[in-house]
Length: 255
Image (cartoon, rainbow, N blue to C red; front, side, top):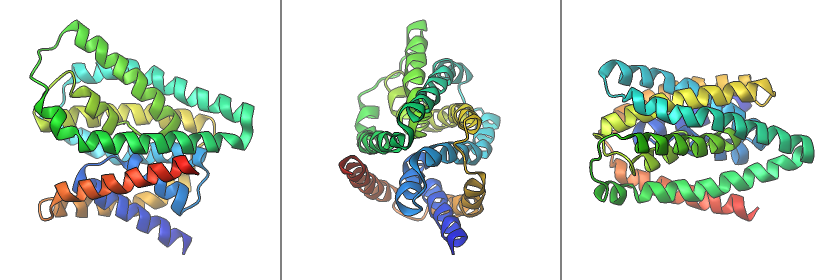
């Protein structure tokens, strides 16, 4: 029954990712913590590995289609990789100092991000409307590295934001065609979640059986979601999910 529940959760998350494009971190992590009662620190590491594996295929497709800006990926990774290392290291330090009390800190941090990320997603259209095309400059690439540093630190601690936060902040620098923005964001997310999951594996924060079971459901779910994305009112579904995530984040902050 436990395995069936995990496969079902993986299928639901995969379907929603395929339909809406929302990141696995914001969708899966609350289900792991509240639904499966996985200790938050273990949920963060397992979620990072799940996100890494699920994005490999789509990143390769975008790379082959030329919808990736490699210089932007490198600029983001220059900040996000060390940021992720610092985030995971800080989490390990907190566990050493506070023991299981680190789980309370993670729950609060994830709750805060689950309030911020859906809010940014709901404002995405307005952000896009007010940002004009800007040519690349050294200043903008330095800014992207700073974005990567902050996002990497957050992802290292919570596994949330490898796509959503960076996507929103990236809009402040560029206004690429949507498919290019998505492709660039996904390829960078693979690098970031790969480093993050490796760091969590190193300190024993990953449940590999849990990840494998979730993937059994998420892979067909992602295919179904991609098929349904052209047949359901996705904007409304995204708004509903954002509202649910906001309430979930508020509950995690309240606990």
